[in-house]
Amino acid sequence: MKFKRASFCIKIVILAMLVYGSISLISARERTAMAETDRAALQAQVDALLRENAELEYDIAHAGDPTVIAEIARTKLGLVMPGEKILYDVGN
Image (cartoon, rainbow, N blue to C red):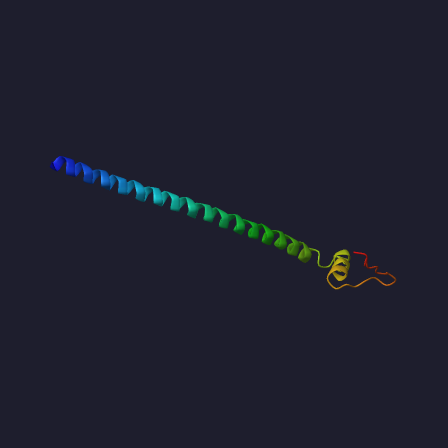
């Protein structure tokens, strides 16, 4: 009788351990998937910042170049050279 009762208790303990292990495994997989998503988002931010950094380094290296100065004046300040005409497309 004692052997059957002990065997039943062992089966319950083993079943409880299997359930706990399964839940832990599922939880670990979810955390891993979330961490992978976060890593991908952070990598995209790093790539964007590296591109921006490269552009800024180029601007610093070519700060005295008249072509770069003229391009900055056109794009960021909206300036034009004397005699130039700006045409705006209002058809869209």
